[in-house]
Image (cartoon, rainbow, N blue to C red; front, side):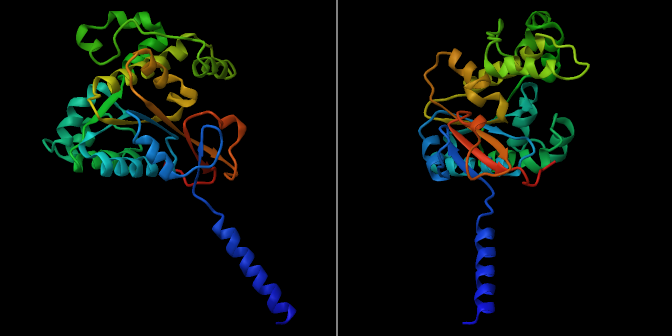
Length: 290
């Protein structure tokens, strides 16, 4: 074999190896060790509540949410319950009407408060629940009530009617401002130019976490698995929703999943270690959904 041909073959082989290394994601455990989707599924089946933290515009997050839901359903059937931050609790009625087939898609999409990425990222999950006759819970606090907390603190919620309070976690709200997630929010806000930091800023986040936790627990049934979708910051480092679930003192096993983006995914950056039981590491160059 002549030298030119040998060099050419080595070049082609090298290109092939580079192409094989282009991974859409790498999965890590909480200690930063590489693991597998099969291991995550196996662990998910041992837990009662799965907190699946996404990056809202990350295609891999949304794909794996659907894949995990499908595989859980294949194992436990209608004992699977789904729920999401992306639906506010006062939209539960219209969501139920749509899932049951009582109203059509046009009425649902025109009257429900849907996120702008609903059709690309959230609708597949809703359709999965609809097609398999699964409960899908609207867990988030109505944004108008979160805004009250942002401006007036938790005390502002006391002025709500009893009917309005039906859509939020029971008052008074437990709150620990020293939790890393909430203290970090204050630090970040203080660094924003022209922004006047208010101690109510993380409280508005906390009322969302508390309400999502409350409606997860309200819809739990024996031998069910509840998979909940939300921005990763709502459960990263076992804060937020996870913390509020623990405050309930109910004996549920909770699994957390987070999503992160890195320039290189062959090892997990130190700042992401410990974020969740399973960490989906996605190339930063991954196509965004919106």
